[in-house]
Amino acid sequence: MVDTGPDAPVRSAAADAALLAAMQPYLNGRSAEDCLTAYDRDGYVIFERVLDGAHIDALRSALAPWLEQNLAGRNDFEGLRSNRVYALLAKSPVFAELVTHPLALAFAEADLGPSCLLSACLAINLQPGETVQPWHHDDAHIQLPRPRPSCGVSAFWSIDDTTEDNGATEIIPGSHIWAGAPEQGSLEARNFTDREIRDTGDDPGVHPQAIKAVMPAGSFMVAKGTLWHRGGANRSERPRLIVTPQYCPGWARPLETMLAAVPRKAAANLPERARELIGYSIHPPFMGYVDGMHPRRVLE
Image 1: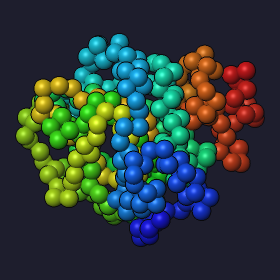
Image 2: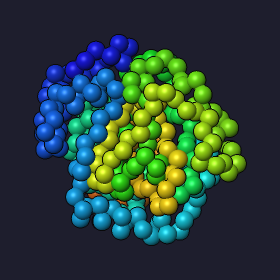
Image 3: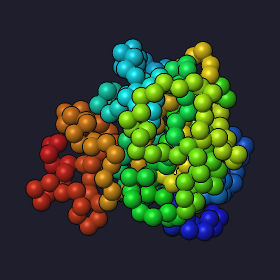
């Protein structure tokens, strides 16, 4: 574990040990220690080909009815040439396997604690012609001054290959410890109302340190909630599909109100750990109770 200054990890030795163990099946010749060092130094790390073809096909099939509706994003941030599918745990139980995948959970629990919650879980399908997103970080709704430890962990699962041309997520390595935002092209209030169609070459936020998270299908990238990143422009002739579960501490309000997004009947049929992540759990000593009782009682 490396010291990253104001965002120095606050994980315990036990959490580090559990995280190192969880990485073992997915290292492909790397050392777990090197991966953890990269995660703390750069704010992200990639594990290639974590999911096999059958799992990818199952996820793609579960998303197909929703993507076929071809509902476009509502503003520049969502992407006017993108399809977003929210509340995935209400759409199919297959997404619970991603949300509770041991590799993703190991990072979330190590950084945010065992009482962490699922803050968001959505699919993002970038259609050809989509432009770059504004630079943003996923725990910005936790309005504490930067630099600070991250209050979120974001998982990016590539359902398609993500390439230089089709809109691979762009990241600024090491930006998770910055005090401020990129000088140009970072998220503003107008990005949530702007519906102007732009050209893929129109990029107000070119950054010299940015790189593209190029990954084969089935790969997993995990990023700290304070890492500055954005969706890339899709200059190819095919869509680019990812699924991104995002986690927050047990004391924080999730971005999506999961208890409302996932009907109670559907929640009752989820694996226990998935139910805990959407709010049927307690953050010590008693945050999250329902009528003075553990929230799981409402599912019984």
